Length: 262
Figure 1: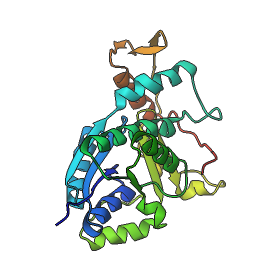
Figure 2: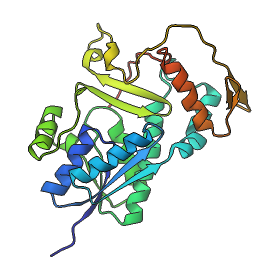
Figure 3: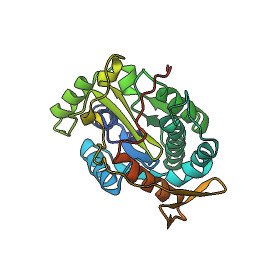
């Protein structure tokens, strides 16, 4: 019997990539390697759950590729230096993180000698371009598989398929699509597809919990954060995470961005 082809799935644990892992392993005969490229958007608990789910879905191997510090050193700190905002509101979080995630996936695919790389991007938005172009440059000759995009699958179709094969997960916020990273969380879909409406509080992953006064002091040295409220940080990533923890309780940083995409 011929060896199965190896495919690396850029696995976030969300609906599209969960469907991709199961479809490739159960129906298409691939040996699936699920790789979660983390740029600061996953807690240890979430990564553990991702691993468990990947194996339930049929993956042969699961790996977490942590590129949070690489992302900070090669991209994020320069955006902080320049106070970079697109359209004076969007901090270029998801778009900049995607490149580092894609590079990490391509590296891993080359390391294990994969025949293909799969991602869960749909035909809407720029993520599909970021992933495709990075894989083409970093892993030339490796096949790119995009089941959700190529088959124009609805989220309901994907859920029905997973359920029919015995996989049940909490997809209660199906009408929204979330991208979480160290530099921001983007939420798409639902009410904000109509410009006359706003996003309801329950759609946010972190909710406003405080309305009292508090002080936030951030110290910089040569453009980099060195202290938050007097507490020193050698690890700049941890400093950013601390600021996010404080600000999220007040809903600081929320905004609505209308952008053009493919």
